[in-house]
Amino acid sequence: LLDPRLCHALLLVAGYGTRAGSGAKRRDSDTAKRRCSNTAQRRLSSGAKRRCSGIAQRRCSDIAQRRCSDAAKCRCSSGAKRRDSNIAQRRCSDTAGYDRGAAILAPVLLRLYTILATLYLLASGARRHRLQGGDVSLVFYRLGPLPWRRRRRPAGPPEPWLLLHGLGSVGATWGRTLHTLRRDCRLIVPELSALGGTRAPGGALDIEQAVRFAARLIEEQLDGGPVTVAGLSMGAWMAMRLAQTRPELVARLVLIDAAGYRDQDWDRIDELVRVHDLAGVDRLYGAMFGTPPWVMRRSRAGFLRAYTSPGVRHLLDSLRERDTYRDGDLARLAMPAALIWGERDGLFTLETARAMAAALPGSRLYVLRGCGHAVHLECPRALAGALLQVRRELPVASPG
Image 1 (cartoon, rainbow, N blue to C red):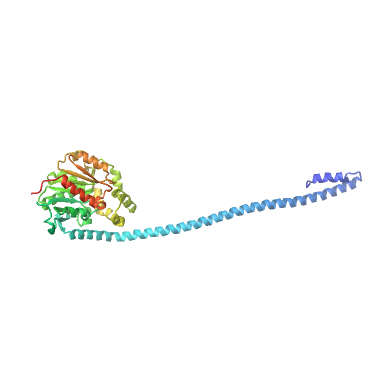
Image 2 (image 1 turned 90 degrees about the vertical axis):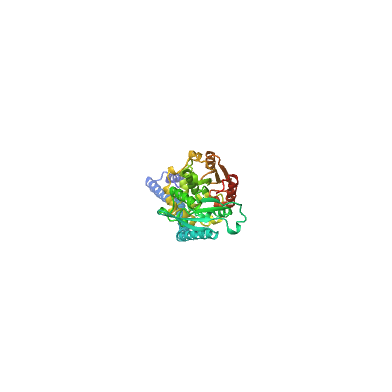
């Protein structure tokens, strides 16, 4: 109905198309056209405006909503980012504070640990001595049967033992083992690094130095041997080398979760023992313990300090492939030998222990159920019991 051509046709039908004067017809026709056109244009314009206005409103509304939504998202995102940033900053600040505190306290705690370890041994009746050799001043302890228990021990002289502790450790960590053995044994317990007070280049004895000083201790402090040599982890590696190079000094060999066996994944082992942060400590704990003792869980920072100490770094850096031992080296040993192993040792696995036992003639393997690598810390009772069992099942000639 808004079409001007349709409007014109209707007007003609209504009578404006009669034969009046041509001028009048033309005038009437022109007037009608103008009126119809104006009306149609006004109607069209109003409709178009309304339509345009509706479209514009909808478009404007859509744009506004999108803009509002985008603005809200930006504000929400900005707020979330600010909140996340604040949380991250607080966490980072807390972590940095913890790290600063640990860095300050760790040397103090490590020194306190060394002092307490010394006091523990002295309180147990141990006597502290030094053995000089070149640029090394080795601290070692002597323990024997307590005077009020001499009547209870078996007849005969005390059985001589040399105990070699592990990497990043001290002699006092033998703990219950010392009390169990000293009832009827003479014990020599050397400190193999600066953690126990020994002075040596690099802060620790390497394997060759340890073997040389272990031989001197047997010769000078244990009547020349032969004696039972027991080593734990790195100490077992040193004990194994002593048995190879000076077999006449070793009456019985006890290897506890021993390091040094060549045929195993050394890349994995090296990655575990070279810790740089608390995450590395957690990974090493997973290999060392079936269930970490409470005191070890609470002393992660001190453990990190010990395992990043110059002595530990020096010893690890000094190790070479020629220092390891293979099946042929084990097969040549003639003395009675025992292997004591944690069932859940994740550093040197139980499969390694079985392979070593198969190569070592006449040896016996004692598996401590549920224990990890650090059996002296996690399962001290089980370790002490296994050592008593070794003494019963693998006897040695009584010293003269």
